Image 1 (cartoon, rainbow, N blue to C red):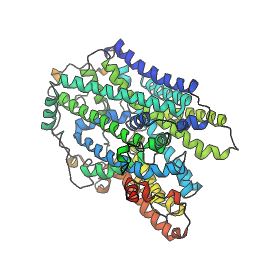
Image 2 (cartoon, helix red, strand yellow):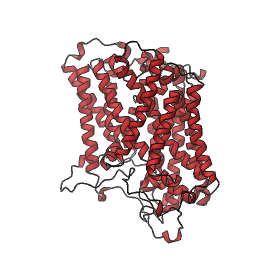
Image 3 (tube, rainbow, N blue to C red):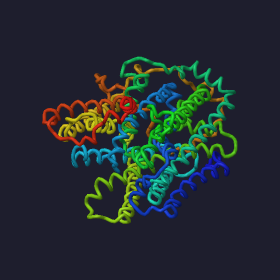
Image 4 (cartoon, rainbow, N blue to C red):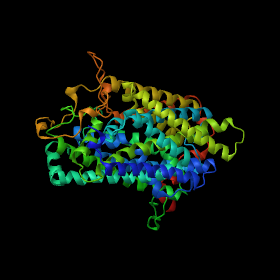
Amino acid sequence: MHSTDFMDQWDFTVFGAMLLISGLIGVYFAFFAGQETELDFLMAGRQMNAFPVSLSLSASFMSSLTLLGMPADVYLHGAKSILGVFSFLIVVFISAEIFLPIFYRLQITSTYEYLELRFNKQVRLVGTFFFIFQMVIYTGLVIYGPAIAISKVIGIGFWTEIIGTGLLCTVYCSLGGLRAVIWTDAFQFSIMVIGYASLIVQSSLHDEGLGRIFRISKEGGRLEIWDFNPSPFRTHTFWTFMIGGTLTWTSIFGINHSQVQRYLCCKSQFQAKLFKFSIQLLSFHQEYLALYINLLWLWTIVSCTVFCGLAMYTTFRGCDPLLSERIQESNELMIYLAVEILDFRGSLGLFVAAAYSGSLSTISSSINSLALVTIEDFIKPLLNNPSERTLSLISKVICLFYGILCIMIAALESLAESILQIANTIFGLVGGPLLGLFSLGMFTSWANAKGSLFGLLIGFVISAWMGVGNYWYPVPPEKVETLAPVSIENCSRINSIYTESMRVPEKLDLISWKASAIPSPEVPSIFWISYLYIGPIGTFVTLIVGSLVSFLTGGKYQEVNEECLLRRDDTIFGSWCKSK
């Protein structure tokens, strides 16, 4: 069976149009929008409006791993992922009211420039190294992750898909800089929403209405989302999302440079926020615009993916594609559903474009942010007053370098299964301790360089120990939360067009988070803790150890740049109190 058994000429036209427009945006900003300086290339001249930035924030956060993985998680484990919408509200509020005001006040270019202003050069370089390690591994994972499912439907080779994805992102990053990345992200996010919305509409028609989907999902336990069990060993509960999820995602929206870079490229702090929640509320100042509009987009796409998971359960509950071995991995479930039910012209191409856009937006954002921190933190200090044109050229070369490096990492990850499993928790392992480091600098006046650096390293070691243990010693099957099971009893009634001949060599399941445990009579139960708590553990260890060591090494006697500390009037409540 050939690729045309999945996608016809209309599908390929829609998919090709998405790729063409994405590439043309990069060409336009390279040759017609004036990218003469480093500031233009890496920070869009700090002249971006809030609306495209908000779309870019959401697009880069919702990678294809999430777009394909969240519906699969809902199908297998229920719709508890929807609780993330409450976490996002807190995350955006914290990012807008605590971290953003300080970064704007200091007018920094690299997020990790703050660490030098608050501590010293060594702490800045260590923080930058952690970020580069985190993003290179994760970006390689995003390139590799959906390649199996997407390459099957498109009908191209597995490695062709990986290399093509990496090169396309590298080209428009290298040519058009941050402006191209943001506007391409905005376009691709629109494709994501339209593609998933089309699947929702078709699912409701295929399954005889939305009411039937919700009824069957409820009967199967997929709508049992309100779990208030405080145990940290349950994977998804209200508390794991509100505590673990909030802190994990704050490490992304609050301090991760790939996100912060977008806030800082806005025209002003007014463009980076939405409303002044004080006596000026009714004047509709735009101080919170990019972050809070981004919140609406996050709610939209999460709702779409959760509903797709419910529709998937309604369709496949009697013939599970995994149990029937029609597919190999859970991250193929969404593509499989699209192939089975999308039957109007161009609809499958639109959905594949939506899933593929999740990869493109995340990869391009990562490459651009990696280039910026490398230049600001490593390259510039080695050069003697380089010209803006020289820095702009170096920026493009660095983008090309990281694009090729991430492709190589994706190839490495396809060969080493354990790297993939560990990389799936990379934001928690690295982001948690980094959040603790920035929090030490902003919230305490006694934290010094020695204590903070020591706290960061201990926090990372503890997080890594927990993450690796979580992989090697998964929760025993008898202790895993179970829902109404799926079956294969109706498989004979379903005529699948998803062909065995399209299979690629067996790959690791990227979504299930399960691994074969090393046989051991006594498995330390601490490793069964929810993965959403691994990052926060690193945060709190960094805070506690960093504070103690700083206090013991004379941190309370040091002079601190007051501009680096959080002020009461930085927050909306502080501003409101001050205005009274």
